[in-house]
Length: 315
Image 1: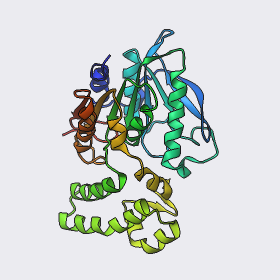
Image 2 (image 1 turned 30 degrees about the vertical axis):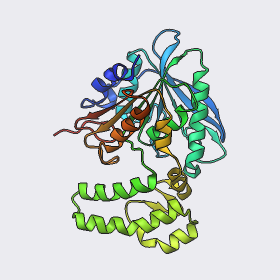
Image 3 (image 1 turned 60 degrees about the horizontal axis):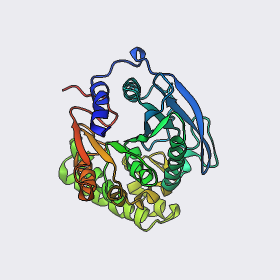
Image 4 (image 1 turned 90 degrees about the vertical axis):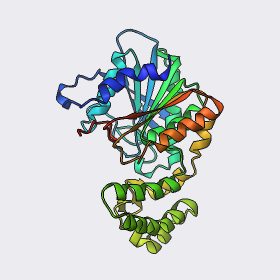
């Protein structure tokens, strides 16, 4: 089974104008647990009828410390996707980030480094592959946003047949933050000259944060103006809801190397109106990296009129 045929049902259902959460009947979740380096995390498994083994999808969510519990109503589009996958005969497995959903973790989600988060999902994948109802020869990862960044980092340690990503890139985070600061400002109508000025103003902060890895006392004293911008949503030592060390550690992740070392199938998707990942450049770069050593194994799909959260946008 290749990734593109497998994705057909999801594209048809997920990327249509979504209905309300009330008229969506999602398969019941089997609640379980996975042992991770910081303790134990809660898992949710959605299964087709029968005993399996089933082709399986591990879903990796984005960066926010938000529960993955099925009853959470903030992402009806994801529920549509899970339903489409299960109806197509796939088992879908989702794990909470450490410290969320009632799991026992020595570190709260907001205090994790990126390496600790990657290590947690690496263990989740390892335990998923050992389940008797999982067809380990047909195991895929679907990574949304930051989850797509994590996907190749854990796939290289396991036998993963394919990776599907949505709304990601393959650059070091320092470079991506510069790109996105300018591009998002211009997309919402800020004069390009002003956007460029504001972008240049935050580069010293990004450099001290991600390259030199300065401590918080230095960052908060030296870059108070940059921290006051809406880009970071600073709250004490937390930037966009994660400890500042998370972002420094994230910049050390070598995404290009991870993709170049992956020999499975890849479908890199970008939503036409996705302001969070800017453009289809990231998806195209991922496919280009994979195809250098594995010609034809990676493809790009741009999903029309769709934003970062999967929902279609009229117009």
